[in-house]
Image (cartoon, rainbow, N blue to C red; front, side):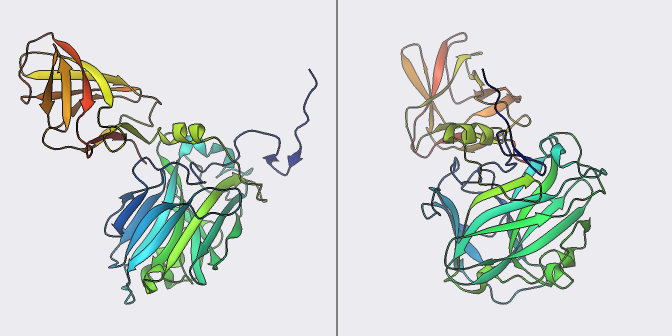
Length: 362
Protein backbone atom coordinates (compact mmCIF):
# COMPACT_ATOMS: atom_id res chain seq x y z
CA UNK A 1 0.00 0.00 0.00
CA UNK A 2 1.59 3.32 -1.05
CA UNK A 3 2.31 5.94 1.56
CA UNK A 4 0.31 9.16 1.37
CA UNK A 5 2.42 12.25 1.89
CA UNK A 6 0.84 14.81 4.22
CA UNK A 7 1.84 18.32 3.28
CA UNK A 8 2.72 20.65 6.12
CA UNK A 9 1.92 24.37 6.18
CA UNK A 10 3.38 25.92 9.27
CA UNK A 11 1.92 23.97 12.20
CA UNK A 12 -1.13 22.75 10.25
CA UNK A 13 -1.59 19.23 8.92
CA UNK A 14 -3.35 19.84 5.65
CA UNK A 15 -3.77 16.16 4.82
CA UNK A 16 -6.10 15.04 7.62
CA UNK A 17 -7.03 15.07 11.27
CA UNK A 18 -9.45 17.37 13.01
CA UNK A 19 -8.13 20.91 12.67
CA UNK A 20 -11.30 22.68 13.79
CA UNK A 21 -11.63 22.88 17.57
CA UNK A 22 -15.12 24.42 17.24
CA UNK A 23 -18.05 21.98 17.43
CA UNK A 24 -21.07 22.59 15.17
CA UNK A 25 -19.39 25.48 13.40
CA UNK A 26 -21.65 24.94 10.37
CA UNK A 27 -24.75 25.24 12.59
CA UNK A 28 -26.03 21.83 11.46
CA UNK A 29 -27.34 20.53 14.79
CA UNK A 30 -30.13 22.21 16.80
CA UNK A 31 -31.38 19.66 19.35
CA UNK A 32 -33.14 22.27 21.51
CA UNK A 33 -35.13 23.65 18.58
CA UNK A 34 -34.72 25.77 15.48
CA UNK A 35 -36.21 29.04 16.77
CA UNK A 36 -36.41 30.94 20.06
CA UNK A 37 -38.08 34.32 20.65
CA UNK A 38 -37.36 36.85 23.38
CA UNK A 39 -33.67 35.98 23.71
CA UNK A 40 -31.70 38.54 25.72
CA UNK A 41 -33.10 38.33 29.23
CA UNK A 42 -31.09 35.34 30.41
CA UNK A 43 -27.93 33.36 29.70
CA UNK A 44 -28.38 29.97 28.11
CA UNK A 45 -28.50 27.77 25.03
CA UNK A 46 -31.48 28.15 22.75
CA UNK A 47 -31.06 26.82 19.20
CA UNK A 48 -27.87 25.62 17.50
CA UNK A 49 -25.95 23.26 19.76
CA UNK A 50 -22.84 24.50 21.61
CA UNK A 51 -23.66 28.18 20.89
CA UNK A 52 -24.61 29.95 24.09
CA UNK A 53 -25.79 33.45 24.98
CA UNK A 54 -23.92 35.58 27.52
CA UNK A 55 -25.82 38.74 28.48
CA UNK A 56 -26.45 41.31 31.14
CA UNK A 57 -28.52 44.42 31.70
CA UNK A 58 -29.84 45.06 28.22
CA UNK A 59 -33.51 45.62 27.41
CA UNK A 60 -32.77 44.48 23.85
CA UNK A 61 -34.38 41.26 22.69
CA UNK A 62 -33.95 39.11 19.63
CA UNK A 63 -35.21 36.00 17.88
CA UNK A 64 -32.56 33.34 17.37
CA UNK A 65 -33.00 30.78 14.60
CA UNK A 66 -31.19 28.07 12.72
CA UNK A 67 -31.55 29.65 9.29
CA UNK A 68 -31.22 28.31 5.74
CA UNK A 69 -29.42 31.43 4.50
CA UNK A 70 -25.76 30.47 4.11
CA UNK A 71 -22.73 31.00 1.86
CA UNK A 72 -21.99 28.54 -0.96
CA UNK A 73 -21.22 25.08 0.40
CA UNK A 74 -23.14 25.56 3.67
CA UNK A 75 -26.78 24.74 4.40
CA UNK A 76 -27.31 26.56 7.70
CA UNK A 77 -26.41 29.62 9.71
CA UNK A 78 -27.23 31.03 13.13
CA UNK A 79 -29.45 34.09 12.66
CA UNK A 80 -30.10 36.84 15.20
CA UNK A 81 -33.02 39.19 14.48
CA UNK A 82 -33.51 42.21 16.76
CA UNK A 83 -37.13 42.45 17.95
CA UNK A 84 -36.71 45.01 20.77
CA UNK A 85 -34.15 47.79 20.40
CA UNK A 86 -31.99 49.23 23.21
CA UNK A 87 -30.49 52.56 22.13
CA UNK A 88 -29.76 53.85 25.63
CA UNK A 89 -26.80 51.68 26.60
CA UNK A 90 -25.97 51.59 30.31
CA UNK A 91 -22.37 51.06 31.36
CA UNK A 92 -22.90 47.47 32.53
CA UNK A 93 -24.79 46.14 29.52
CA UNK A 94 -23.42 43.38 27.31
CA UNK A 95 -24.50 40.65 24.89
CA UNK A 96 -22.38 37.98 23.21
CA UNK A 97 -22.72 34.56 21.68
CA UNK A 98 -20.05 32.06 22.63
CA UNK A 99 -18.64 28.56 22.57
CA UNK A 100 -16.59 27.13 25.44
CA UNK A 101 -13.86 24.49 25.17
CA UNK A 102 -12.57 21.91 27.62
CA UNK A 103 -8.94 22.25 28.65
CA UNK A 104 -8.12 18.75 27.42
CA UNK A 105 -9.31 19.75 23.93
CA UNK A 106 -7.00 22.76 23.54
CA UNK A 107 -3.66 21.34 24.68
CA UNK A 108 -2.35 21.48 21.09
CA UNK A 109 -2.24 25.28 21.37
CA UNK A 110 0.67 24.81 23.84
CA UNK A 111 -0.39 27.96 25.62
CA UNK A 112 1.86 29.07 28.46
CA UNK A 113 4.97 27.43 27.01
CA UNK A 114 7.86 28.68 24.90
CA UNK A 115 6.38 26.63 22.02
CA UNK A 116 2.97 28.34 22.19
CA UNK A 117 1.13 28.46 18.87
CA UNK A 118 -0.74 31.21 17.07
CA UNK A 119 -4.51 30.71 16.91
CA UNK A 120 -6.56 31.52 13.82
CA UNK A 121 -10.32 32.04 13.95
CA UNK A 122 -12.33 32.19 10.72
CA UNK A 123 -16.06 32.50 10.06
CA UNK A 124 -18.66 33.76 7.59
CA UNK A 125 -20.95 36.67 8.50
CA UNK A 126 -23.55 38.99 7.01
CA UNK A 127 -26.26 41.36 8.24
CA UNK A 128 -28.90 43.80 7.08
CA UNK A 129 -26.43 46.71 7.12
CA UNK A 130 -22.81 47.55 7.86
CA UNK A 131 -21.76 46.91 11.46
CA UNK A 132 -18.62 46.28 13.52
CA UNK A 133 -18.38 43.60 16.18
CA UNK A 134 -15.56 41.90 18.12
CA UNK A 135 -14.30 38.33 18.28
CA UNK A 136 -12.56 37.44 21.53
CA UNK A 137 -10.52 34.56 22.91
CA UNK A 138 -10.79 34.36 26.70
CA UNK A 139 -8.45 32.16 28.77
CA UNK A 140 -10.59 31.17 31.75
CA UNK A 141 -7.77 29.34 33.57
CA UNK A 142 -5.48 32.37 33.71
CA UNK A 143 -7.95 35.26 33.22
CA UNK A 144 -6.29 36.47 30.03
CA UNK A 145 -7.88 37.61 26.79
CA UNK A 146 -7.46 39.13 23.34
CA UNK A 147 -10.05 40.72 21.01
CA UNK A 148 -10.16 41.81 17.38
CA UNK A 149 -12.80 43.78 15.47
CA UNK A 150 -14.50 42.54 12.32
CA UNK A 151 -16.91 44.12 9.87
CA UNK A 152 -20.31 42.90 8.73
CA UNK A 153 -21.89 43.85 5.40
CA UNK A 154 -25.04 42.81 3.56
CA UNK A 155 -23.12 40.09 1.68
CA UNK A 156 -21.62 36.90 3.04
CA UNK A 157 -17.96 37.60 3.88
CA UNK A 158 -15.33 35.30 5.33
CA UNK A 159 -13.50 36.88 8.25
CA UNK A 160 -10.05 35.61 9.27
CA UNK A 161 -8.38 36.74 12.51
CA UNK A 162 -5.05 35.43 13.84
CA UNK A 163 -4.17 35.77 17.52
CA UNK A 164 -0.49 35.84 18.48
CA UNK A 165 0.78 32.95 20.59
CA UNK A 166 0.61 33.47 24.36
CA UNK A 167 3.56 32.09 26.34
CA UNK A 168 1.95 33.01 29.67
CA UNK A 169 -0.50 30.71 31.45
CA UNK A 170 -1.11 27.10 30.42
CA UNK A 171 -4.53 25.57 29.96
CA UNK A 172 -5.56 22.98 32.56
CA UNK A 173 -5.70 19.44 31.16
CA UNK A 174 -9.22 18.51 32.28
CA UNK A 175 -12.89 18.54 31.26
CA UNK A 176 -13.60 22.01 32.67
CA UNK A 177 -13.80 25.26 30.74
CA UNK A 178 -10.41 26.64 29.69
CA UNK A 179 -10.97 28.65 26.51
CA UNK A 180 -14.01 30.67 25.42
CA UNK A 181 -14.70 32.07 21.96
CA UNK A 182 -16.91 35.17 22.20
CA UNK A 183 -18.62 37.28 19.58
CA UNK A 184 -19.45 40.65 21.17
CA UNK A 185 -22.36 42.44 19.48
CA UNK A 186 -23.54 44.84 22.23
CA UNK A 187 -21.69 46.37 25.18
CA UNK A 188 -21.66 49.39 27.48
CA UNK A 189 -18.70 51.43 28.68
CA UNK A 190 -17.61 48.80 31.21
CA UNK A 191 -16.42 46.80 28.19
CA UNK A 192 -15.68 49.56 25.68
CA UNK A 193 -14.05 52.52 27.46
CA UNK A 194 -10.44 51.31 27.28
CA UNK A 195 -8.14 50.39 24.40
CA UNK A 196 -8.94 47.26 22.41
CA UNK A 197 -6.56 44.52 23.55
CA UNK A 198 -5.56 42.62 20.40
CA UNK A 199 -2.89 40.35 21.90
CA UNK A 200 -3.21 38.15 24.99
CA UNK A 201 -2.83 40.03 28.26
CA UNK A 202 -4.25 40.01 31.77
CA UNK A 203 -7.95 40.76 31.50
CA UNK A 204 -9.16 44.33 31.81
CA UNK A 205 -12.89 44.39 31.04
CA UNK A 206 -12.73 47.90 29.58
CA UNK A 207 -10.50 46.61 26.75
CA UNK A 208 -12.62 43.68 25.59
CA UNK A 209 -15.13 45.15 23.09
CA UNK A 210 -13.85 48.64 22.26
CA UNK A 211 -15.13 49.99 18.94
CA UNK A 212 -18.14 47.74 18.37
CA UNK A 213 -21.55 48.71 17.05
CA UNK A 214 -24.70 47.78 18.95
CA UNK A 215 -26.81 44.99 17.51
CA UNK A 216 -29.77 46.42 19.43
CA UNK A 217 -29.61 49.85 17.76
CA UNK A 218 -32.63 49.07 15.57
CA UNK A 219 -35.35 46.46 15.15
CA UNK A 220 -34.18 46.20 11.54
CA UNK A 221 -30.88 44.69 12.69
CA UNK A 222 -29.95 41.12 11.69
CA UNK A 223 -26.74 39.12 12.10
CA UNK A 224 -25.91 35.77 10.48
CA UNK A 225 -22.88 33.59 11.24
CA UNK A 226 -21.69 30.16 10.09
CA UNK A 227 -18.55 28.26 9.12
CA UNK A 228 -16.84 29.06 12.42
CA UNK A 229 -13.39 27.51 12.70
CA UNK A 230 -10.72 27.80 15.40
CA UNK A 231 -7.39 26.17 14.56
CA UNK A 232 -3.74 26.14 15.50
CA UNK A 233 -1.49 28.17 13.22
CA UNK A 234 -1.24 31.54 11.56
CA UNK A 235 -3.22 30.72 8.42
CA UNK A 236 -6.88 29.84 7.93
CA UNK A 237 -7.48 26.58 6.13
CA UNK A 238 -10.70 25.74 4.30
CA UNK A 239 -13.58 25.05 6.66
CA UNK A 240 -13.42 21.45 7.85
CA UNK A 241 -16.74 19.85 7.00
CA UNK A 242 -17.92 16.70 8.75
CA UNK A 243 -21.01 14.53 8.51
CA UNK A 244 -24.19 15.44 10.38
CA UNK A 245 -23.82 12.23 12.42
CA UNK A 246 -20.31 13.10 13.55
CA UNK A 247 -21.35 16.62 14.55
CA UNK A 248 -24.39 15.28 16.43
CA UNK A 249 -22.23 12.80 18.34
CA UNK A 250 -19.82 15.56 19.39
CA UNK A 251 -22.73 17.75 20.48
CA UNK A 252 -24.26 14.91 22.52
CA UNK A 253 -21.27 15.04 24.86
CA UNK A 254 -22.85 18.28 26.15
CA UNK A 255 -26.56 17.92 25.39
CA UNK A 256 -28.56 14.88 24.33
CA UNK A 257 -32.29 14.42 23.73
CA UNK A 258 -33.73 11.23 25.21
CA UNK A 259 -37.25 11.63 23.84
CA UNK A 260 -39.17 14.46 22.19
CA UNK A 261 -42.93 14.36 21.79
CA UNK A 262 -42.86 17.04 19.10
CA UNK A 263 -41.13 14.53 16.83
CA UNK A 264 -42.88 11.32 17.89
CA UNK A 265 -45.49 11.12 20.65
CA UNK A 266 -45.08 7.41 21.29
CA UNK A 267 -41.28 7.40 21.46
CA UNK A 268 -39.85 4.98 24.01
CA UNK A 269 -37.14 6.30 26.32
CA UNK A 270 -36.26 3.42 28.65
CA UNK A 271 -37.07 0.16 30.36
CA UNK A 272 -37.99 -0.22 34.00
CA UNK A 273 -39.90 -2.00 36.74
CA UNK A 274 -42.09 -1.36 39.76
CA UNK A 275 -39.80 -1.24 42.79
CA UNK A 276 -42.81 -1.45 45.08
CA UNK A 277 -46.49 -0.60 44.74
CA UNK A 278 -45.90 3.14 44.12
CA UNK A 279 -42.30 3.59 42.89
CA UNK A 280 -41.22 2.81 39.34
CA UNK A 281 -37.57 2.92 38.28
CA UNK A 282 -35.96 2.93 34.85
CA UNK A 283 -32.48 3.03 33.32
CA UNK A 284 -30.96 4.16 30.07
CA UNK A 285 -27.59 3.80 28.35
CA UNK A 286 -26.64 7.10 26.70
CA UNK A 287 -25.67 7.27 23.01
CA UNK A 288 -22.45 9.18 23.81
CA UNK A 289 -20.50 9.49 27.05
CA UNK A 290 -21.23 13.00 28.29
CA UNK A 291 -18.70 15.50 29.63
CA UNK A 292 -19.83 14.86 33.20
CA UNK A 293 -22.82 13.37 34.97
CA UNK A 294 -25.73 15.28 33.37
CA UNK A 295 -28.72 17.08 34.79
CA UNK A 296 -32.24 16.79 33.40
CA UNK A 297 -33.72 19.33 31.00
CA UNK A 298 -37.38 18.32 30.99
CA UNK A 299 -40.73 19.60 29.81
CA UNK A 300 -43.36 17.84 31.92
CA UNK A 301 -47.07 18.09 32.67
CA UNK A 302 -50.20 16.17 33.49
CA UNK A 303 -50.14 12.78 31.80
CA UNK A 304 -47.07 13.60 29.70
CA UNK A 305 -45.58 10.11 30.15
CA UNK A 306 -46.74 6.46 30.24
CA UNK A 307 -45.39 3.29 31.81
CA UNK A 308 -46.57 0.25 29.83
CA UNK A 309 -46.73 -2.95 31.88
CA UNK A 310 -48.93 -5.93 32.58
CA UNK A 311 -51.17 -5.29 29.56
CA UNK A 312 -51.89 -1.65 30.45
CA UNK A 313 -50.50 1.87 30.51
CA UNK A 314 -50.10 4.05 33.60
CA UNK A 315 -49.96 7.81 33.01
CA UNK A 316 -47.65 10.01 35.07
CA UNK A 317 -46.37 13.58 34.95
CA UNK A 318 -42.59 13.61 35.35
CA UNK A 319 -39.43 11.66 36.08
CA UNK A 320 -36.55 12.39 38.45
CA UNK A 321 -32.92 11.37 38.01
CA UNK A 322 -31.73 9.03 40.75
CA UNK A 323 -28.32 8.18 39.25
CA UNK A 324 -26.49 10.43 36.79
CA UNK A 325 -23.32 9.15 35.18
CA UNK A 326 -21.48 10.06 32.00
CA UNK A 327 -22.47 6.82 30.28
CA UNK A 328 -25.98 6.28 31.61
CA UNK A 329 -28.77 7.35 33.96
CA UNK A 330 -31.35 5.87 36.29
CA UNK A 331 -34.67 7.64 36.85
CA UNK A 332 -37.85 7.14 38.88
CA UNK A 333 -41.36 8.31 39.59
CA UNK A 334 -42.92 8.16 43.02
CA UNK A 335 -46.58 8.09 43.98
CA UNK A 336 -48.15 8.78 40.56
CA UNK A 337 -48.38 5.09 39.65
CA UNK A 338 -50.07 2.34 41.63
CA UNK A 339 -49.00 -1.17 40.71
CA UNK A 340 -47.44 -4.44 41.71
CA UNK A 341 -43.81 -4.75 42.78
CA UNK A 342 -41.75 -6.59 40.16
CA UNK A 343 -43.90 -5.73 37.13
CA UNK A 344 -41.54 -4.77 34.28
CA UNK A 345 -42.35 -2.47 31.38
CA UNK A 346 -41.19 0.40 29.23
CA UNK A 347 -41.56 4.19 29.30
CA UNK A 348 -43.07 6.32 26.54
CA UNK A 349 -43.70 9.96 25.76
CA UNK A 350 -47.48 10.55 25.78
CA UNK A 351 -47.81 14.25 24.83
CA UNK A 352 -46.48 16.35 21.94
CA UNK A 353 -45.08 18.94 24.38
CA UNK A 354 -43.19 16.40 26.49
CA UNK A 355 -39.43 16.31 26.23
CA UNK A 356 -36.61 14.73 28.19
CA UNK A 357 -33.04 15.83 27.54
CA UNK A 358 -29.80 15.80 29.49
CA UNK A 359 -27.24 18.59 29.76
CA UNK A 360 -23.58 18.67 30.73
CA UNK A 361 -22.71 22.03 29.19
CA UNK A 362 -19.63 23.98 30.22
